Every structure is written in structure tokens, then in C-alpha cells.
Image: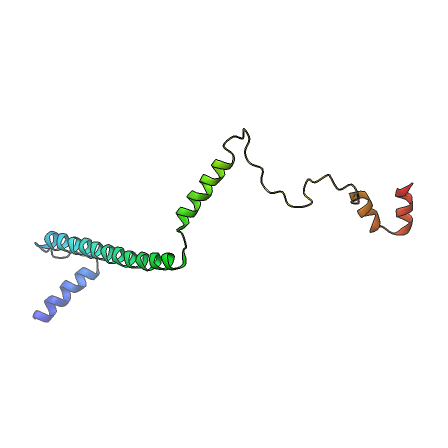
Length: 129
């Protein structure tokens, strides 16, 4: 008989019936949330310790080989750029790749001459006239 009653309770739950309310459910849920928060804090502390250890190793390597941090390099480059253009009213010129905008070389072929090279003979003669 006891088995039958438990089976009907379980069937009622599966069919969407109400479960029995646990009087300590709120307290258990609060404890569970607190445990999760504590685990998360421990995880963050562990990762912070690991990162501090890594940074210590990185610093020993930087000291050994005379390297600088990225932030230090960027700050020095920025300071050098500001110092270089301190008296200038315009921004510093950027390096222009060779052949881009240089009109000094007049011996270079024009675009039309380049296109004409690829045309058949009779068409070349027609355009040259």
C-alpha cells in the first residue's frame, strides 16, 4: 500500500501536480547562492594570484633581455612624436610609398601608353594618330 501511495504521488508530479513545499527551501536556496558566491570569489582570487605570478615571470624576462612593456613603448613613441612636431603647425607627414603621388619622374610612361601596348597593332596605329 505504501508503494502504491508513493507511486501515485510521483505520477501526480509528472502530470503537473503540485509538489510538496519544503519548509526550508528558501533557506537552502540562500545557502546554495552563498556557496556559489564564495566559489566565484575563490576562483577570482586564484586567477589573480596566477596572473601576478605570470607577471613576475614576464618582468624577470624583460629585465634579463632589456625589453619594455607595450604601454611603456607606446608612451615613449607618443612623446617622441609630440616632441618632433612641437614647433610645427601641421601634423607630421607620413611616409608615402614610392610611386604614389611622386610626379618628379617624368620619364615614366603614361597610362595611355601602357594601355596601347596591349592593343593589337592596327588599333595602336589608330590611337597614335
